[in-house]
Length: 219
Image 1 (tube, one colour):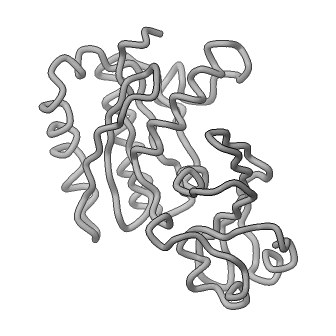
Image 2 (cartoon, helix red, strand yellow):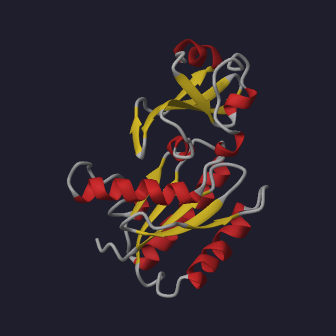
Image 3 (cartoon, one colour):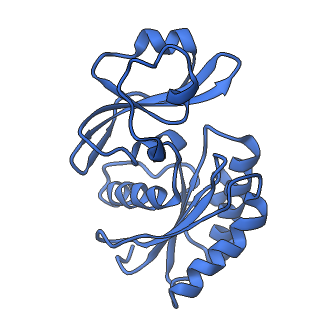
């Protein structure tokens, strides 16, 4: 895949949605369009994507990959993002891949160490996963899981720092170190950055192409 191509990132799994556009290769800055807070994802997503393309002439024709958040999060929000990703991937005949919302949030963290992402999914349960950050390297330590609050509290270690909206609301985590509140929201710019890393792994054979990569129908 040409390093001159573009990646479109879509994040609609949480209350604050966004879209982003960045080059496939290198560490170039990612252009970013946030949505207003609220239940506006369906209204905002396509106009915001058009705004991104209008700022980068030729990017629509050079689109190489669509990456979209796949939750956990709002069922309606995820459905809006995935539906848009499928439609654009089909129309532009480009690959697509899904990214965990927990991994997207973890990408916001600044500082080395183990970071546990927490999202409160109600009824005494949370979505969680742990990642290790060392400089620019991100390593997943655990799979995404839905746990009761008590199960999660039994797993949290003293070396873990917490990030995600759940670390502000779930009882029992108050004494654990937490990241800055501004890092709690997943952003489409991180979707693009994660997609860049995964695309390199796929193209070098280090990772198998995920579902949806060759057919958006499977997203």
